[in-house]
Length: 140
Image 1 (tube, rainbow, N blue to C red):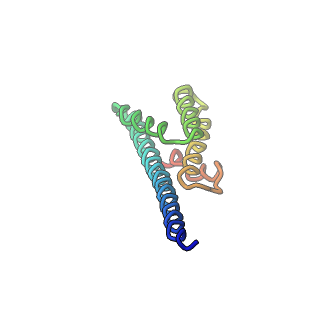
Image 2 (image 1 turned 90 degrees about the vertical axis):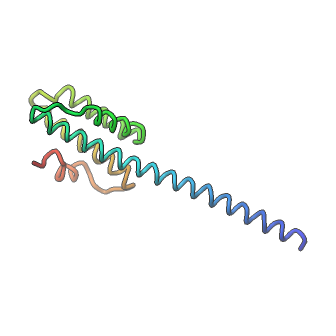
Image 3 (image 1 turned 90 degrees about the horizontal axis):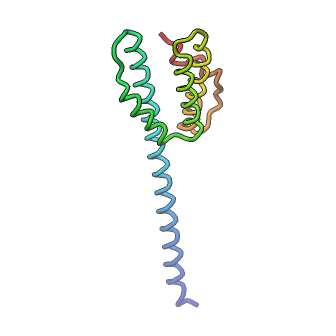
């Protein structure tokens, strides 16, 4: 019995090391994905608002940057965020120049922002109404 003790100890130790390695790789992957999501979300909104500002001043907008960051959002975001981004884009295309579309755009934007927050923070007790009070679309 004592002759098997070193072998059993080595096997158990090896299993713990192997499991620890795979858990660490999994956590690293999740952290890397979260970093890429945060970067994509931040840069997408930065390019989107920069283009909105340029268009409002009659200057040509840099659509390439906005399309690039939107593509990154689609690559790294959850299904819910991608779906809400699509709804916002559809709303912007159909209501962007018409009267009365502002409320719908604001609701879609706030829902997207909340979904992105839930994805990056993990859990949140905020609602769309809470987001509405500090929505970047409302600021000057």
